[in-house]
Image (cartoon, rainbow over all chains, first blue to last red; front, side, top):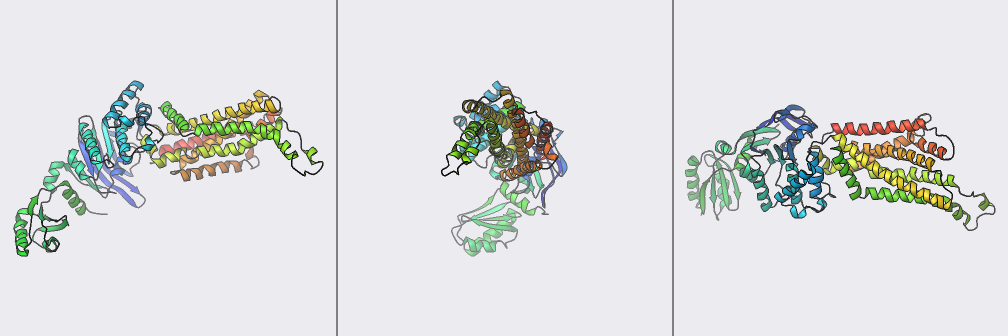
Length: 308
Length: 252
């Protein structure tokens, strides 16, 4: 459905994309993950036809993405990172009178679809208010609505929930989840919890290249690093400083009375950790081998990825 | 698609009060021109301690003074207003991000520029129409009727004159990424054309000559500003084409 091969994009001295390759299969929700400045938004801008790559090619539904190509854009819905609107317009006017007609929808269909979408994104009560007075969260919801008005086959969402409160985030992620049968979704985000919640496939981009791409569960299995957590009200700081030299311990971090030890193999390292705790007389509330999270995978892969 | 964008632009002209400003300001120019022409000599003659004999030298106003005042006001205040109201139209959308939102939809970028141009021109023409009616009315009341057909022809030429500068301002706005740079680009283009108007031979093809030609027509002479009319239309066409081509290729 979406295919990118050897995409390169440079802005002055900055190489935003450095030979990016990725593939999004039909009907999947693809979590495009990466730190700030990794190249996520640049990729989406190229796929949206707003920017030209310096090298490489992209395809959407087997049609090459060409800069400024209007026909291709009929198939895609785009939600940019900070959706911008005309402050003097209302949501109803934006969707019914501007967005829907641009996709060739009839007045009757535009009106019907507008009402349904505003209800779906929770903006019915603000349908006739000027957008100029909207909060960022409301603008993001409206942004999602304008991306969905023509029932696109492809959705490109750049940080779709970043401005929302937890309740709003949950609602919008559920909405995205409900769309998976209707559209192929490329969701760009740096919020790992969102990826864990809705994405089937995860692609991690760093310094303009795809570091890894895999099904979410497979990623955790292959790259998840075991972690031993030690929770204590005692002299945890002092203990954690020497814990880094224990066999098999790669990294130690400390937060909220809990030391997290990233280890090569939990079974091998656990006895040494326990011996150290006993030897130091550290009073512990909990010692646990923790299932790796996507955050652990992400941090590990982006730390290990080669830099330019 | 063009009609959708045009409707949006016309709505924007109303909601942002650009249309109201065009209507109000131009109507004021239209009404004030005969008033100024009529009462300036009266005001001058009423200056205290005016040297003897000088009052008799101040000529009585005529409709020629009305036309002079009308053209002078539009070539200065009117032109400035047109440029100021147009210079941010495209750049503002780029700066705000609404242009990118639109261009991610199946929109021809040239259509976006043309819609803005036509909507702005419509507001200008509406304002000019009111100005013309106001001027005709007050001139009839304060002086004598203006020759309607010739006055309308003058206003048509005035529309072309202002339309050229509107197009130049829009083109300047299209070249820039921010409102401030759009304003600068618009003023540079406008000043360039104004300056070219004073270059011998070349000036005959510049929009400024349209006003002189229209004035001559109204005063009973013949219209000989055809080179200026052709030059103005070509200039506006090139500015609009340049704006469209630039926007078509620009990354956002």
